[in-house]
Length: 350
Image (tube, rainbow, N blue to C red; front, side):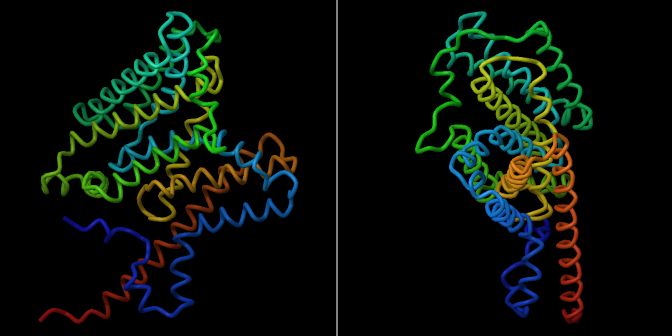
């Protein structure tokens, strides 16, 4: 099976060692352009807005507000590793946050049990998605769009199209409201989930298997990797992350409403896609996904504090996406040129 590292666009140490410093810097810059741009944006807005942007309050606000998107982006990253897309994350979070509140308010179920029920249901939705995609061989976009629409319809039916509200247990509110060591609880969830996924994707055989399926499914199967089990598994994982994120959103809003949730779909997918353009260009990765959402959060927060209009957020999201794609394309072209030059230097086999 072809090495996964051979398809990566980031420069290797032997490659950099054989280049002059300025050329080595030119190879690294496109690969890590997005993190560098993130730091540059933070510095830029800190200079322009010294009294409001570089403050602990603003940092906590960014971490708390965008943690939901990061969690969904990390969840959507799992199917992307195998070359699939899960659109139910945006539709599902509508259902899961309404269910988390209605189980407590209408049926008197204790909040820990309500969260468990939501996780079971979201995991089951992931099983259905996995079976539709891998067993029924339906395109992942079509399959998850269909199941996501069904989940949205069920959310409308469950809520009756009205807001679901009532008295919630303090423990459930603390799921979002706690701030250990001054860090918003949603950001803690991001750190924990990101660490677990980084270990799985970068250090465990399971991560290499998922990347192998995404790179070449037939080759992965010929090398003994269970494609079906892994694909169903990533959809289950994506569903569980969406279910838990729905519970966090319910704890934050403290009401359930069907018009909340779909707005998270595109930013979450964009965050995961931006992750493929940095750190390890060419494939989704945890650190890249987090950076992808972070640069959007920093840019939008700074522009809004400067008095940006309501249309600035989608404009900035689209512009950042185009810039990130350009950086990734530049890195890929440079890598291709370098690889071709290296191949020409290799003497032909006798």
